[in-house]
Length: 217
Image (tube, rainbow, N blue to C red; front, side, top):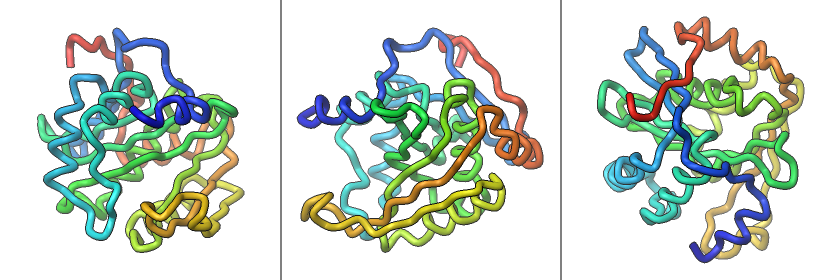
């Protein structure tokens, strides 16, 4: 990956493919949320190609980029499954310079499953994982024309009971001409316990989550 070295300066990779992965069930929706593995690369590529987001040029990454995330950043990445069907995924990484900051890279959800709170559940599950115990801030960039993602994040503020929220315009020179105009979002401050996040997961009927052996998924 051409920008791998530059990316690694900012985001913290995990040392090796895990023997066990994190998994959480949402029985009332029939949805399973679990950590990504390298076996999911084809799944992500196929999903991205079949479910494009209008007016979002950078939404489909090459297969090697998804492999990179699944191989080195899997503990902070999530796939949402309905049975064996992938209905969405969320890719995020901890900042190398400050692991208290979690940065959302990409989020996608199949059209017919939108507006059901599934994206909120994916993000809440991630924040409540043991690996994110030290995370105090969630950050991300939102395309100015992608109002659904912005709306979903705003709804989460009430559910998470956060104290601080920042949304600023990102100057075009920071991203270059190939990137859409964006807003930079920063939400926090989360406590290590993530009490409000976990309470909301319980209200939605989610289980407490568990580690499972990768060979059994």
